[in-house]
Length: 354
Image (cartoon, rainbow, N blue to C red; front, side):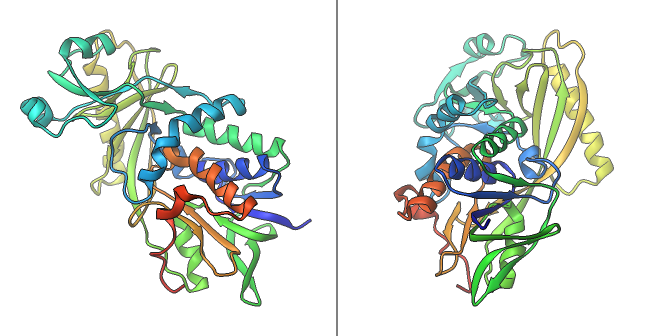
């Protein structure tokens, strides 16, 4: 049977699109080159979600106000989706030194002092003098979230084809008619490209240049006593949060380190975490990995790429944050044919060669 939609990429965005399409009754095939969902950059995500603060270029600003409500909806709809609503504490050396003269809180955020920080993070050995507190911030386990969305899509009738790399898009009479994979051709009336940085190569044979850069980041996993880190911490020494009981994620930017240097850096990061907390007990490095985060120029790129509407692009930075909202809106557009106003500033106007 010809699928109405083939979704390329079983990361969090592709899984969300597939789930929301299946929920609306569309015939969906979800395809990924990996043997399991979230094996790419999604699995290397720090997965800090929220509606406040951060760098939200272009149309992302129009989407973030729906993020927490969409996550709450998914918790009610999809077994296995769980949000850890902890709030976040963020500070830099400059903000501590300059206090309220520094770039301060935005809407929904406020300064807290050392006593309040100690109450929120009782295990933190040396709380900063002040920090920006965002009480609505939360986190998810990105792998479990994506797996739950894929299972839910399957339960609604979606076909999931893993361990099957998409090698090309098939074009017949100038129209894309499906995807060619390592395990065969998958026909579709519409192909949704939600494969992160891989969308660049997939679009080149169509004569399209998609402005998506790769931003590498390091994710470190550590085993800790449950509840050691209470909130999402973003300080000058490290970013850390508990992703599940007894497991902490740490995020770091890369600066051209070799593989051996990355391993040493991860060990040192875990040691800094251990020394930053009272009674940390056993803290053990579980592993580290580098993720190549897709960063579209100017913000999310979401919409039809070709005049015949046979190819649709869905790629964004802060993908874990925006995925539930993007999936809902993309599915609505594809099923009803009516454009979503919230996506008006996300359209592929920067894609060349169209």
